[in-house]
Length: 177
Image 1: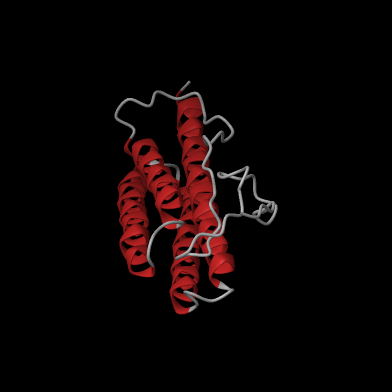
Image 2 (image 1 turned 90 degrees about the horizontal axis):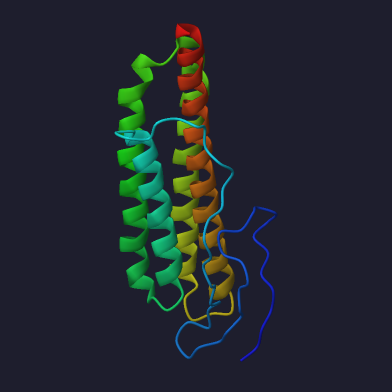
């Protein structure tokens, strides 16, 4: 077994301390997931906060995918990415329901954050297809790493969407006080 450090393009890593382990099927990189420690969210009441719950569900689906991707066969990638996509769809639907009650001045920023998440998912899908295409080649491990980096970016951007919505909510609170 060989070891090498894998750096996820300057993003604060969801998965740190990766070990580069060659196994007989994947020739993949085994990444050891660690707890996510994003910056704290706004100090808001989270009871019945569907946006917060769906961001958490999306991040959990990304963590689940990261835990399962390395030993997985290429045909298992699609269901994993599909779970992430469904979590994102649920989040975006919840945000669409929430937007009307938020100040109009915040709508554009929220919509831009939503577009970024859609683009992140497209990037994850593209990386998944490359990982499937290059299975059993020396490039496979690189494309799996890129899949994980794309999934990480999606999770980080979901947290950023939550922050944008929280800021809009805080504007409502400060206007009423």
